[in-house]
Image (tube, rainbow, N blue to C red):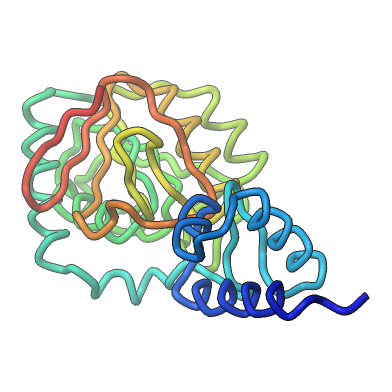
Length: 241
């Protein structure tokens, strides 16, 4: 059955918007002045035709991927250094012994600052972080196994979940593709979101390390965080209820 011209124009507009990244249904609805039920139907049919990728609550363009870690290491470099410095202060204030360091470009900067902290035990799912901490007088490092992402160089999946469900840490420093005070952490995949949600449940304190450009981003999946988590950006700490 042929698609009516109005529907076709709307779907072409959706494809145009998705070229900028993933969009939520409410945002598409507002931008195109169309009901959410109509947008939802469009997305369902467009996904069936292979034109888009459906995400939780929205859609992303075909081929949408997280930027590679090497590329992200160069972005917002000064902000990431400021965040890592404040995170180190937080670690010292808390007088912790067990730490989880997430995979990510900002957490790598924190890892570089604790290479000589032999009193710490550090759990990580990030390959770069494990290598950065592999130092003769450095902390004890425990690498969490699992499937390795070719983009983030972090582990996820069943093996990762199994290991994380059996540990407990004083503080967990998490990276994020997006941050929202209500929704928590945004990630490019459900596996990544699930991994962060699981470690957050196993930590006494949860601290998100992400520069302010991560606020308000549209991503594929969200990880809810426990009450009382903290977000550190280049402006300082922000306690979340």
